[in-house]
Image 1 (cartoon, rainbow, N blue to C red):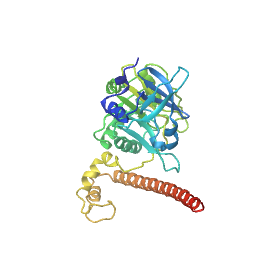
Image 2 (cartoon, rainbow, N blue to C red):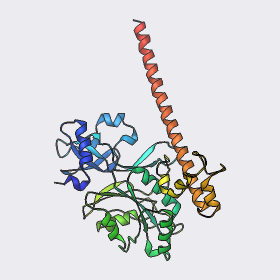
Image 3 (cartoon, rainbow, N blue to C red):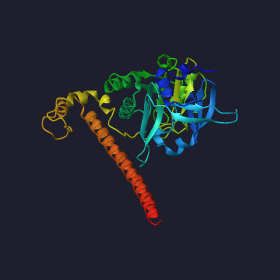
Image 4 (tube, rainbow, N blue to C red):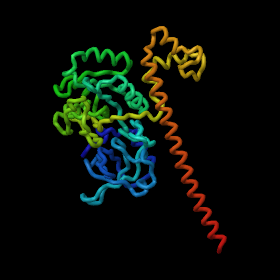
Length: 357
């Protein structure tokens, strides 16, 4: 038997489950997804599950269960059968990104996680701008962000990198680790207390799976070396996986993300709290910090109080998020118009059929 609190089940999810009013279901947590099928943990242990037909055909992709979600599960009748997921419980937190490429949908990366570790390698992977981008999505998710600077064993100025990240990301804890040498892991373990869930996100080759293996004490997740010619990682982790740790916490390993599109402006102000504070002093409430008179942000740049590069990155993320939000709204508008058009045509056909009787 598995204790549900060790899997992160608490009164918040208990209330959601009771509110559904479904008989004969038990709480279960999604640990992996494989081509429409799922692996789930319940009090009975690990099992397989599939969606009830009404969920499969009527739900938006973002509303379908993702790794980390709690669901109402109808247990299988026989050991050879799969359980049936009758409903997805409302999420406490959800880390999302804009789908890679030209798609306008939002992709769920991790659900119901308490901590999101933004992992950045101290090799060619190192980029403070990318860390800021990840932090924006983490703050928007509702989870607590943690920065992990990995591969300290191959970086001669690792301490300087920590100072730089601390200055750019105030208020967010930064940990220096070497997963290969098992250095700096005690602090990470201490954060993942029993019942808490942490997700590791970052680009390919940053060392996420190596960190997970080190925390587990065994090489369970596949890893590969980065490419020597450019320091880029290969996509070794092919799916998201929720794994219990020996100390009672849980970790969610994710595939590397070469793209992390911002789908909303939520979270950006938390990353750039200094710019947000300055903007309160601007003459105009809707100041875009460009050519408007009385802009306190531009004045801070001119006086050397705010690096221009930091303002440029803030404005870039704002523009990107606003553009993606507009595309998403346009996509939803067109989809709604298509549905209403179809309903109108069906209603018109029924009226003609009745009039011909």
